[in-house]
Length: 398
Image (cartoon, rainbow, N blue to C red; front, side, top):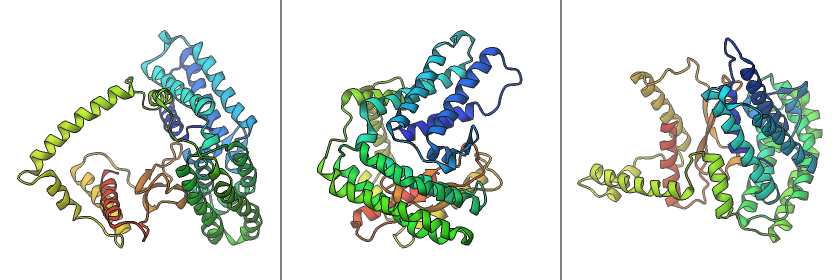
């Protein structure tokens, strides 16, 4: 229903820019601040799974952790209605009374709205991409599990209530999905197997004993629905394949809304190709007297193995942190909340090697995670070497 990844960045930017009111607020300030609040928190209320990831828990008295996103026709209409209302209010604001920061907020909101409209009305990902539903469910359950915004019993009560809503969401998914690219279907089934394992093993094992029975009761219909969804994907949707490509026109639109560079894809590609030539020339100079290929081969020899994969990533993070402190590059918080952990199975379709999952924008003291995706035994040796080297590099960058 939403381009959630881009929307998350847009919401985070809006949250951070409106985190503290100025000492004096003119009428225009109050007006734009209210529009920002209504856009951010209204959008989060319509996507409870996203709300949890940014630390927004209660909206107009409703506990969002008890809910899941609504992909019914009414839910989709509510999203579009909210955004049309925000657009109408933005159109009434007089730019001459706005600060540069406020104008930037408006551009962020407009781009997010246009990106969502493109996705809902034209691309219609919710009709073609089953990973949307799978990853939504995984995040909706996993985030309250790993982010300690409340005690374990409170968080597991939220998880239990979300489990009870999974069958309805699965029904919506099966009603919405008309076709899907083969690779998206395959990834969705693999990630959904991770959801099944999350519900049946990890969450069940760690559920407080006082809620064990209630958890088991709620897990039964959820597991039935999740397993049935994989059967639907493999037995029904797999027979209705489609192309994942957006096409030139839609791609150009999405490109402008998401990157907001003011350049066309062709212009940015040209710049990238020119940068590639310059970068290769620098690599030739740095590698001399060896060739670039020989130098890269030497570098590739110094990386982790599947056996030391996770420990190497943790050590790289510790080394990088110590370097930053020693060189006084930036001020680091006294208590680090960054953990290096296995990538959840339901997200491995996106994070084939690893990735950074930042702390909630509204609760930055809670956990931030660097996900490292385990290497399967069946992976070819060339990909194993590439994955090990990539993870070490990403850990340093983080």
